[in-house]
Image 1 (cartoon, rainbow, N blue to C red):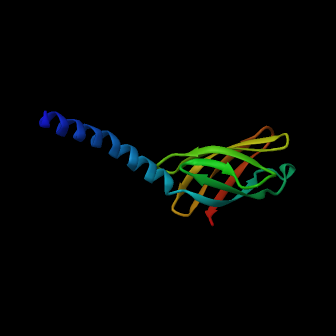
Image 2: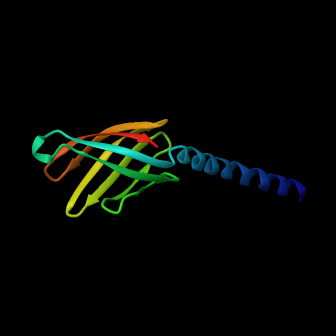
Image 3: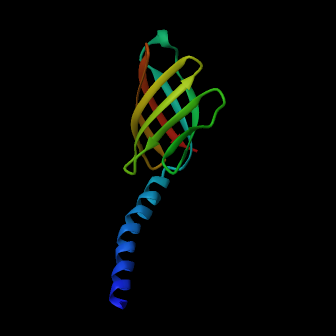
Length: 118
């Protein structure tokens, strides 16, 4: 019986440790990020700056004017959807340490973005 308990405890630890590690890795990107958005066309505007928050890998808006949602993977790849009124853009890229960059695409416009953790 004691051998059974020891085996069960070992099995639980083997299963639980990767889950705890994944949560810790995703949390490394937690915080407020300042995202600068640039357009590839003058017709689409000169771009803007948006603050987003990341908590446990989930992206959320830090602004009432822009709704943000998305996910950051453990390795830093990120996908985000930004909505402001009737405008919608999807962004992809990578975060590393306290900065990041990528591209975005809207209905009529495309561009790039850079980010810094505040």
